[in-house]
Image 1 (cartoon, rainbow, N blue to C red):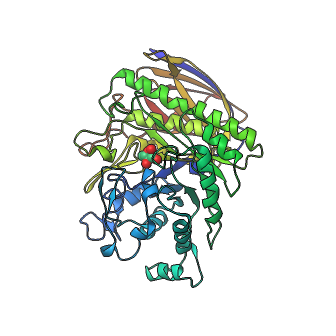
Image 2 (image 1 turned 60 degrees about the vertical axis):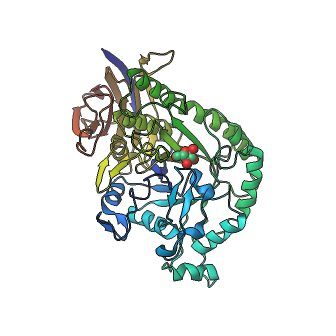
Image 3 (image 1 turned 45 degrees about the horizontal axis):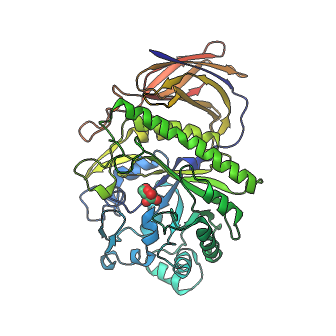
Length: 495
Ligand code: AHR
């Protein structure tokens, strides 16, 4: 069977910028996300530079990663910065109460995070502790990181090996205050946010962008309350949404060996984010018509049952072509709303949830999601081009259906027009016809990511089962026609 989609693009019609931070990442002290995934320590047999594993650093540099959020997540609200500075041998061991109750060695702390961000060329997004911290603890951390005078905290930073201040680009206060961050009401959190934001002073560089921690799912109350109670600096409100194949947190569905019905429900559920974004943007348009407050989706991605034989608290899951398709479909949605959606952070970078990279001791693999992000790199800071699409709905087995094809177009910084086309169907080829007006093109060239099965994945023994291949198509009289294989992601450059 075949699905049809007809798309028309006025290639001259460039509009707003797709902020590169839509390609942001998130890394938390959770499972093997940081320890083993990024940090192995200087004495490790795994090839490393000052403790950071070389393979992972290189893979991340190649994406590239515009911004990285740290140290959590739920972990952030129990993180005390003093535990993670100074001589590594004398740092205290704590319990990671959120994620498996394992030991937190604090070997990766403030200095290590900023050095990591510098190594991969990413901006920094710091999540400070509201849940179990104090405004004083936060203020002192900020002084430690940014002061340039001879304050004792600045001296302490220097004594710990860092002369220059650290550069904090983005800052958020608390995380999921409605849940693990303290089970608060939005009104209570809004007051605390204003209090903390008032004292969140930095002493060098540009002041960070301030983010209030917002809601999740179909609830717009957090955006509503926060945007109406902005009394201190608030440049953005965040939002989290995870895609589960089932809607059951106790049995989310498997990462690899899932039934057809869960391919379909994953697509239906992931696309719900568009309505959630729209509903929140409507609230912001009412309370902030000038558009001063951004909307940051600072956690998103698939969340499946943990792989068998892994610590249930470590959220380690495999990644198939389904994840690559989910990532591409979400990125296409983010592009559309990029005027306000100026940052998103997929959860999470390495070894946790919908990861870019998986490691098994000295081995590393790039996931299908990594390939989507890499193929989409030209969209970072590109100019969005709106388009018209008429696509068949692919009937899902339940009551819901979802569109067969998702598409996005933009003019990249290199001056070329790029198109991304995603076939969301696991079964049917999509016959896509594009009409390109206002410029003459002769070829579309790029990469296609697809695989034999709807659950093909990269394993440590077969690390390259799912990887992009080079493709090219002729464009004749402004018509480009593509037979998009089932479960595929295509990114092409128009020449
Ligand atoms: O990404 C894993 C967890 O999901 C984060 O710690 C938390 O913010 C969210 O519930």
